[in-house]
Structure formats: C-alpha cells, structure tokens
Length: 453
Image 1 (cartoon, helix red, strand yellow):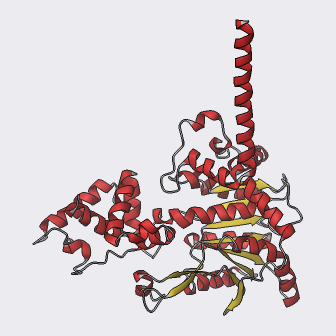
Image 2 (cartoon, helix red, strand yellow):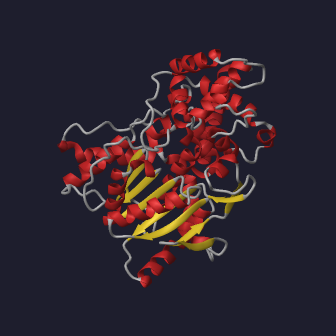
Image 3 (tube, rainbow, N blue to C red):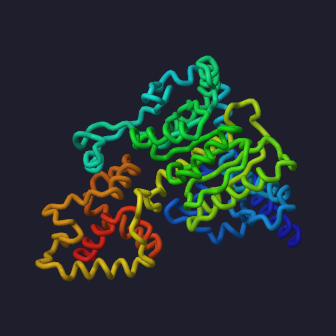
C-alpha cells in the first residue's frame, strides 16, 4: 500500500510538471505578451541586459550561443547553416508576432484608410502613423517647435522599402502590394516609405534629406531591399553607418565590404536558398553578420547580426521574420539609444573610466565659490541662475514614460537624480557611455548628487 501511494504521488507530480511544461511552451509559442516577457526575464532590460543565471540552466532558445567566425573558406556552407539555425532559435520569441502579422495580412481591409499619405518633396508617398507629442524645451532649442507644448509629429521608427520601379504604374503596383504590410508596421508606430532609387548617390541624398528634415520621424531608421537594392543599402551603410538603426537585405547581388567605422546598425540577411557557387558573396554576407554582433551590450551581441534562409512566407512581399526583426530593432533603439553617443563630427575622447570623469568634475565643483544648498554649481549649470535641468536624457525619459503619471509629477531635477543613480548602479562603463551621449546630463547629475547626496 505504501509503495502504491508513493508511486501514485510521484506519477501525479511528474504529470503536473509535464502539464506545466507543455502549457509554458504553448504560451511562449502563442501568447505574444508572454514571449516578450520571457525574453526580458532571460536577458534583462535593454539598458542593463544580462544573462539570467537560473534560466540559462534550462537550455532555452534565448541562450543559444552565436556561431563563431569562419575558420576557413571550406566551412562556408556549414557556417551558413549554423547561422540559420541560430537565427531560428534566438528569434523564437517573435513567433507569436509573426503569426499575428500573417493573420493581419489575410483579414485587413482598406489597410491605409486611417493613415496620412503625403509627399515630402522628393520623397513620394510617405505614410505616417499619426503619433503626436507636446514639444519640450529641447525641441524649441533645436528649432523643431516655436514654443513648448506645441504638438509635434513623431514616429517610433521609420521603415523604408527600396525599389527600382522606374515607371509610375510599376511603383503604384508595388505600393499596392505593400499596403497591408505597411499597415501592420504603422499600427506599431512605424512610418513607412516605398523609395524608388537606382544609384547610391540618389539613395544617400534622399535619406540624408529625410534625416535632416524630419528627425522626429526618422530617428530610428530601418531600410529593406532585394538584389541590387540590397547591395545599394549595404554600400550606403558602408559610407555612413551611423545613419541607420537596421538594414535588412534579401539576396544581395554583389559583395560589399564591412564599414571601417564602427557600425551599430543591426543587420539581417535573408537568402531564398543557399548558393554554394557564389563563395565571394557568401563570405561577404557572413562577415557583415558576424561583425554586426560585436557589441558590449547583450541584445545587439545576440540579435545585431543574423542570417536567415527563407523557408516560409514566399507569397508575402515582406517575410514575417523580417517584419518581426525590424520591430525588435526599433523597439531596442527606442529605449537603448541613450547608451550610444551620437555622431556629430569629431567627438571628445571618452574617459577610460567614470571614476576619472567623476574626480575631474568634482574638482571643478569644489573650486567654485559660494556653493549653497539647492543651488547648482556654476560650472555644471553653465551659469544659468535658475536651471531647468532640461537635457536630452530627461526629454527622452519623459517621452518613453509619457503615460506614467508618477513621472509627470516629478521635476526635471528629481528625474536627473533618479536616472543618474540608475545608470551609476550599472557601472563605470555605462556612465562613460552616457557622458559621451549627453555630457550636460552628467554635469547636472553630479552637481545635484554633490548637493543632495
């Protein structure tokens, strides 16, 4: 009797664990909210990504190791297959989103009926998601608004589909094919554009115009192209890598070398099938994939460079894998862009550690005269008598947390202190990155910290 009872309890426990395992797997495969949440449990948030030591012991797809660099040219086929397998595993969290995308394509009617389509001078048929936010001090300072509180149009990202369509009828036919895919992206806050171009100069000129004239729309730019247009995108990224957040290429027609300058753009290569005869092209594509994963931050070190052999969605204009990748890239940079210094020509040399930066600024603070409680050190506040503590970091934080009433109630000074303490807890390297990105924020934080420890 005792043996039967023990056996019954053991079987019950095993069945319970098996049921939970099956339910968890089903939720990860079918429930988009849960799959995203499990990714954050496994890797942490975008700003402080780190491998979860407990979950990593379970052998989940999140912890698949990226393939190493090519050892010799004879291993190209094996390397491509390894990259494809890795891409399938590491992007498995996007399966529910990809299902939702394919279902959306089959059910949506009048896909662009609710969105604004207009020309931006040389750019024809830009579709915007209709998002607006009130202007802040930095927007007025940068000439984007006349006064604080004015409504400004923005987008979470900007997706460009590159085409070689030379006639109006070809362009309109292709635009009609893309309407449903664009509508899905637009509903996720992403502006869209079908851009016709056949030369590198024309492409770079149009993208430069877009970035300069509509910075709030084109901040997080992802460009997609096939064949010759894919190679043009790679050449444009080679020339100006800091312009792009991500590039997605299908079957590029010719090899393009990697940028000499460090590129933070995510890179996805999609091949219809493996072509063993085109060794030079395969080597070039693999080089882009592997180098794009070279990052000190966790998310880009896993997702920054992927290669996918297209196995499904052959009938849709943009594969579900590419759409999910573009949205993940935009979502990452929407938050984590504060970790990357902006490229505005020559930059000051970044300090080796935050401690040296801290000591340097604190020396300036202690030599200032008449430092009183609640009065910022003049060298930090740039001699503003009543500082607003307005800076890029605070503006970005308010934009991201625009729906959080607790954030709205905080003053800029309180936000600087909160954000600064959070970054400082991440370590010296993160603080050094923030200093390169927004040195004014670091000055504000150190001054407030000194006066209000």
